[in-house]
Image (cartoon, rainbow over all chains, first blue to last red; front, side):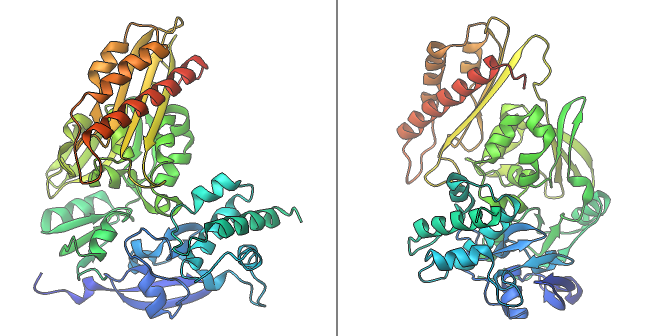
Length: 167
Length: 295
């Protein structure tokens, strides 16, 4: 198209991210991952492949884990979002999934970790009774190139146990 | 990777959608975005206009109608997979959705999006073929229904005009057939969980009290550019007692249909997989039908 109408390529949106309300003008072509990182400065969400394969950019949108590279920022207007920055409590107390990753050495280079942790936090908060098979299926859309899956699964199992209140 | 600039539209009703489709050129419809967003990010697609149909409430939902199970095009895969009406009347669809992508993509991905994207190995079009689904299409020139067998025109090309959109589909489900026991099966082989299948097989059988097949449907994904119904195998089942011997015989018929070829998978390997997946799907269908579940 030769002439782009500013009103159709820019929108004003309001989102709640980690309990904070933001209002911004966004280019409609901007995907949500870029918006979080570049417009809001929340660089904890990592962008790996930007075509929905690696899972690093996973965030929790209205309670559901989603790939932030596969959604336009304009589509998040009105949404409630949790990112990796919002999982720990204000006093620094880690989310059970974060604590388990610490305990079990669930990360090496750390690039995939925000996506792993947000995915596991979302699915385990919904169902802390998940077993190892269910956990492996849940993170099947998250790629770790350090091949750290074993300790990631160990961490997820510990987090599930803690979130069930086993100990 | 950033999408090229486009004008964004977010209609709230089907009427507004039709009006936009009737007035704009070079349009892509944005449903769940799990296939279109990668294409936009990588600039495989560079539309002038993107019409986001996520705000049209009428396009989401599952309902039983006299014609069958009606599913709105924008119903998320996560919702379809867990929906009580799907679990009751078309559990094979819920089972197939287990294999679709990952938890993150099922949160956003829609059944209508998959039916328009039409990857040859996709699970949801395979289930639509299994049931002889009816697809409901509309545009500024009116609405029409398309039978699933007429839906796939060629590789990844649905039977949609540039000014038309898919609104939903109806699955003529098999539940409630008096005096018959219906069973289903779905199996696939993919190199990684969540990838498109290399080959997937779905089966439905309806047995009478003596385990004689009254009706059968078998659909394969990944063997051709469109889902393939194994009509000869279905006919070979009807009127006979379903047992492992018969399943082995008709599964072999899956191996001898013409298979597509790509850089990684030979037709012969696809044929072997088709036979094995069909055998497993029919075995599950037999076990479920004789286990007394009437779906």
